Length: 149
Image (cartoon, rainbow, N blue to C red):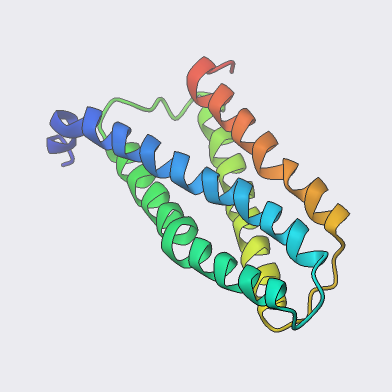
């Protein structure tokens, strides 16, 4: 049924990797912007500039890259004879992709809170959270490349 995907598999994989790199760039940069934004006075020129930067990053890079990553990832899962569903690493990777999606959702909620001048987190909170997508990414890459289980 999906045999035609075998011929374009290398292209799908390359595009998926590009999309994931773009998504991760946004996932790592947005919390860093939040660190600086949290230290800015509400209503200041600096805070308003951060709102613009955060909105553009989210709408132009972060969310579109996430959508492409997910769509291409699902397409890769449909390529015949590529995934052995009996292997634990596949399920682990999907679990951590879900965790990355939850992190993305949290970033979007916090961006909207900043937009409405209702941020309730400190710069330190965002510095710590900034490590979460990194750790998740490392786990996903190890699971997908090393396939330890």
